[in-house]
Image 1 (tube, rainbow, N blue to C red):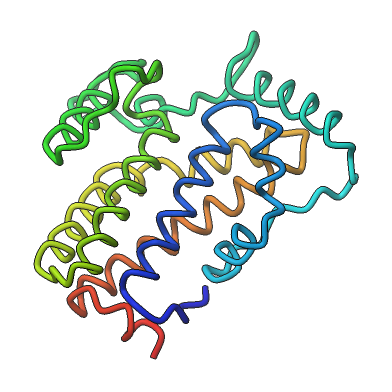
Image 2 (image 1 turned 180 degrees about the vertical axis):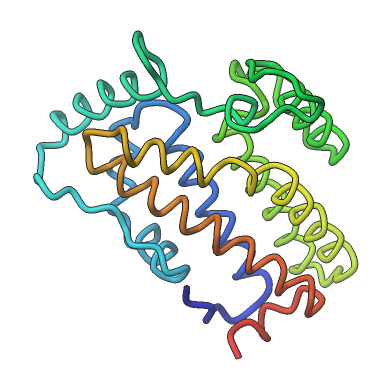
Length: 227
C-alpha cells in the first residue's frame, strides 16, 4: 500500500478516516447519506492514499434501490433470522480459558476493560457490545484522532504512547479475528458492496499490522515510511 503522506498528523488522520468509514459499513445497513458520501472525492482520496480501492457499484443501481438491497443483505448477513455471521470478536476467537464462544463472553469483557483503561469507554447511549467490529474500529479511530492532536501540538511522547496503545489493541484484538470475519462475509454475501468492503477491510487490517510495527520501530516517524 502507498505510504506517501507527508506528516505524522496527516498519516494518523488518514488512517482514522478509514477506520471511521469501515466502522460505518458494518455498524448497520448503509444510510442514504453514507452511500452519497462514498462518492465524495475526499473519501475516495483517503482510500486511494492507503492503497484501498473505492467501492464501485457494478450494477449501477438507483440510489433508492441500492439502499433497499443493502438493507436486506445486511439483515441476512448479520442479523437473521437464519444462519448469520456475528460481527462480534467473542464469536470468532477461542476463549482465553477454554470457554465456548458466546456473546458478552470473556473477550467482550476484555475489550470493554481495555477501552476503559485507555479512558475511552463506550458511550452510554451505544446499544451494541464493545467487541462489535464497528465499536473496535471506532475505538481505533478515536485513538488515532488523539494521536493526530498530539502530533499537531508537537507532543511527540504522548503521540508515541498512543501508538503503543493502538499496537496493543490491534495485537490483542483486531488481528485475532477481523480477517477471518471478512473471509466469512466474502464467502456468504450475495452483494458486491459487502464483498468489496470486506476485501478492503481485510487488506487494511493487514496493512495496519505492518504500519504499526514500522511506526513503533522508527519512533512514530511516518516520514520514514514514505522514504
